[in-house]
Amino acid sequence: MKIQIDEKSAKFISALGENVYVVGGYVRNSLCGYKCTDIDLAGPLPALALNLPPHTSMNMVNHRMGTAQLVCDGVRYEYTPFRVEVYNPGGEHTPARVSFTTDLNADAERRDFCCNAIYYDVRRDEIIDPLNGVRDVEQKILRGCNKHVFESDGLRLLRLVRLAAELNFKIEGETARAAKAMCAQLSDITNERKRMELDKILHADTVNDVPNAHYRGLRLLKQLDLWRNLIPEIADADGVAQPEQYHKFDVMEHTFRCVLNAPPLRNVRLAALMHDIGKPYCLKNFGNFHGHEKSSAIMARVILNRLRYPNDVIEQVVRLCALHMYDMNGEARESKIRVFVAKNYDILDKLVALVRADRLATGYATAEDVAAPHRFETVRDKMLADGTPILKRSLRISGKDLADMGFENEAISAALEVLWHDCVVNPMNNTAERLFKAAERLPKTPDKPKK
Image 1 (tube, rainbow, N blue to C red):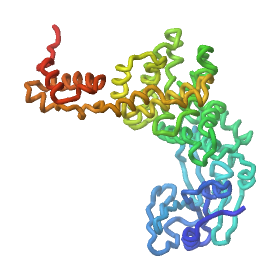
Image 2 (image 1 turned 90 degrees about the horizontal axis):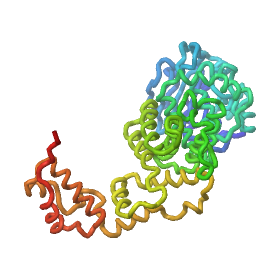
Image 3 (image 1 turned 180 degrees about the vertical axis):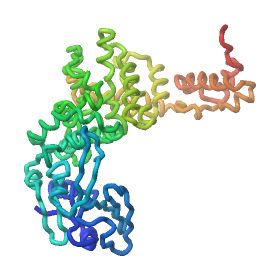
Image 4 (image 1 turned 45 degrees about the vertical axis):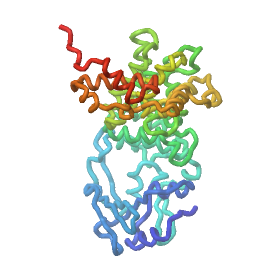
């Protein structure tokens, strides 16, 4: 098997010194025939002892691990000296003690999976494979480097799932059993790191173009009992039956299939994962699923805050969850749809994508059933064609105009809202003459609260 590496990088790595190896994902992906990106390097010397070619910059990114980032001719490399790690009991990702070694075999055994412990000697064009990782690549298998692989680092549980999905690898039986037995180790991992791995699993199909890889990742999390220590609310959805006339699957499987059918637009798959998270709560407390979208939105905010998602992500996902059931039966008047479209214009494409994925995930709809333009899209196109002022700033009257007419500050906002709402429904009214005339009939002072 041949490792593909460009001539410029090969020359740079060779110049660093004797026994500097390419290792990890680059070697694995090259052997798999997948695209290769980051180049990780390892060797017996500390980074400061390397023979850096001219015009190479070095930045120590982790002094404790000895990790340095090297940049030459615009290409980034990450170098780490061979090391041995000792972890405290539990699954904490950070090792308690780190010691450096010149033994390649010892470095290999502290890694996670054997397919990631293949070393490539650029100078000799030679593969060093102490743990039979090449065989695992050929057989498309993920196998732990040692029997304590998950005991020492709980984050490897999520990495196992992500890599299995991204690479389309099977998980070796003993490794799968060890992962399931160690599932509680995930509770020691920080929420930020959980979030990062979850995001990668949700988009696993985009990494190496493996069909349905994201869906398989979600299923693996279930099979290895990892949801309980990742998002316990997802675990609560397992086995929660839904009305058979509307759904073929329970809430958990329906959720996974919604993610499966959701496009990789920003936040859409995360919203698909969250969109029915409130159903088990509603069933337990109210005996039905009515209004589950509101509960889902509230719970999504709690969960995403817990996982330390950025505020803008949380706000958009919460909105998508809250709105995904709107006009599900297509019975709302067009005037209401026009206002809905205008208010949610910024997320309309994502909302339609979520609604389509939700419908497909029932098990009763086909791709042909959802291929036609959604009603939201049809109304939006009509609004764009008839010049509807989708944004308030498109009104032919401004806040300054209202102030000049004698409107007080708080009354200005209320008046603009009324005028905008009318013009969204009746775009022909968006003329200066009609708006000024309509404004004259509106209160110029804010309503006083009733005592």
